Length: 210
View (cartoon, rainbow, N blue to C red):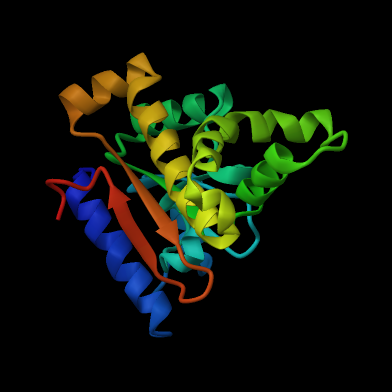
């Protein structure tokens, strides 16, 4: 039986606490026996849509083993059709109830978007624009506020805004996920990982789960 969204969130929080305190689970399922047991089938208890940043590997920061998490990684934890379909696939196929959009402090994709919106030269490559253009709607309004005078505060605010936007897009941009949310107890939550402390803060969509 799959974990409820609330129980899955509790398990992620407990794993992150172990990671932060350097008290990692000595029985973490990463050995040969675990490889063998999950070779035929998997049952991930949470789906993580996270950033590709090399400093934010989902399995490590949540102290989980093989087969525990279905992890989708893309720069800026953006939501494009391929990410939506991957989340749909895992939620339907494995009956996974919790989806986490995981951003992080000092996100390079956010920095690139801020630079793009404030630069005067030719800008980035066309391929990078495919990422920047998805983040732009959450960043551009912030440049019209006092935050434009405080780069660090602007980036912090933009990271959170981008996480919320991606979570909302998953909640409302897929008929499949909307049905699973309404009828099957699936929840989409937003979280931010601190590069400095290692802590994950769940701050969006967690009402009723804690």
